[in-house]
Length: 263
Image (cartoon, rainbow, N blue to C red; front, side):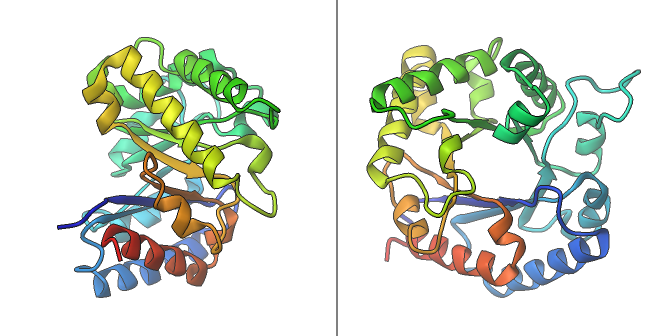
């Protein structure tokens, strides 16, 4: 029996044309179908650009690969020029909606109040939010960093019931590690995820905390990915631009297979 289930996914940011996205999805699906038995304890997802989701859905809907969006609005419809409805994303078969990424917080001035509304809107439509949280700078005291993240989480999940937490994936992404040459130190990542899980336990109970899915993002590299996936309180990895290259993503998936089988 598998020792651990692994969630592995990639957010493409503003990359890949629609034809490139179609080709990527087709090649990824061929790979997954070949590896079907080995991937029994690995869940794979991709988050293309908005423009590519409809075409990607034609390839991946009903398969073992999940897909979704890198953001969404907090309401289903109305006078919100340029926004994308969570209801429309669900209609396309989307599973996930990435919310609260550091780039959205910094470049587009999204605060915790807005992110909280988006989380509630996504859940209402049956989407699973991938909620990105993380401290902006490396604190000298790790506990201060973990406290910062716990407070951020509290603000982003206002109004959430314990049962809703099962549908949320928490992506712990220290902002200072995003785009750097290396991921955060292993002991720091484990310490942060353990702290978050303990915080959820105090707020929602031990059973909710035990089931809570948490993944790490922030310059995941081939040198550190397997060790990160093996961390006790971590359930997977969230990869950015590096996984735009399918061979890179395949290598990461192979690592996830090894971890899931406890080899």
